[in-house]
Length: 74
Image (cartoon, rainbow, N blue to C red; front, side, top):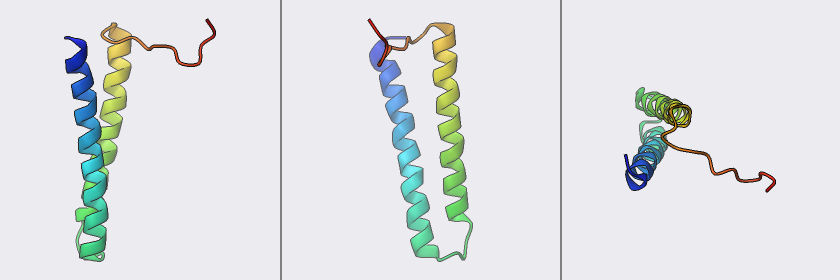
């Protein structure tokens, strides 16, 4: 898998996470607590965030990506 595809996958996950966060805010303002759409949107956001973290941890473990070491002493 090339680097641009990896970056695209992570950015796509982040966009979907932000979309669900915005949907939760929208549903909270529009529905005024009458439906569970806000809870569902925020639950999806949490699930996607956990999935992204696990994917990154797996990718580091498998050697598909390497941390670049920000803050390490040279």
